Image 1 (tube, rainbow, N blue to C red):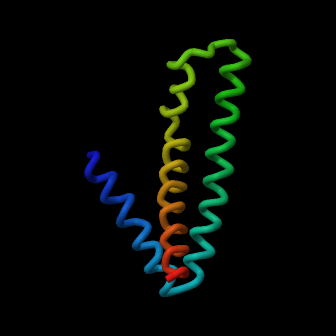
Image 2: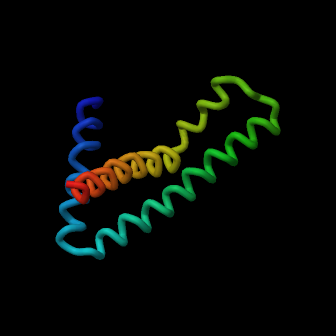
Length: 95
């Protein structure tokens, strides 16, 4: 499973880079998805931490419970891939 995650984190940004070179609409789509993901990711993180502070349950297990949220994991995964994709664009532009 770990190997699959590493391969996906390398291959998806390359595929995204290829697609945005084929059609600029993909670049806009990837950016919109990233904005939506950032809002969802930040909202889940902030509301979860706020609830932990309100409940006065500041334990490592309570804080790490955020990783059980599939929306948090999905949006975080997309943002990770998106950052590598943007770094790839930046690298290719500076060549």
